[in-house]
Image 1 (cartoon, one colour):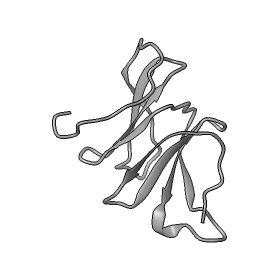
Image 2 (cartoon, one colour; image 1 turned 90 degrees about the horizontal axis):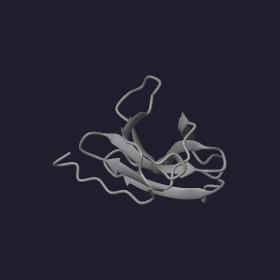
Image 3 (cartoon, one colour; image 1 turned 135 degrees about the vertical axis):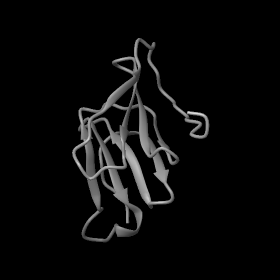
Length: 109
C-alpha cells in the first residue's frame, strides 16, 4: 500500500513506536502514520501539526521530539511526540540561511 500525498521533503521513522513522520509542503503540515495500520482502505495518516513547511525531518527517539528545518523562515523547530494533547512547535534555532538537512545526536542533546 502506498501513501498518496503531495510534496514530501523530509521523513524519519520512530522505530520503537512504529511511526513514520513526514512533512508535506503542499498542505504545510507534519504528518505521522502508524506503519502497521496502513490498509487498502486507509493510509492511517494523522496530522501532527499545521503550518509546517519542513525541508528536513528527524526523530529524536531518546527525548521523543520531532525536529525539522524550515528553509523559508531560516529556523529549526521541534515538537514533542510524547503527548496526547494538542502540540505546539517551539523554535530551537533562528536566523539560519536556508537550512535543509538535519540530524540529531540524542545522547548528548
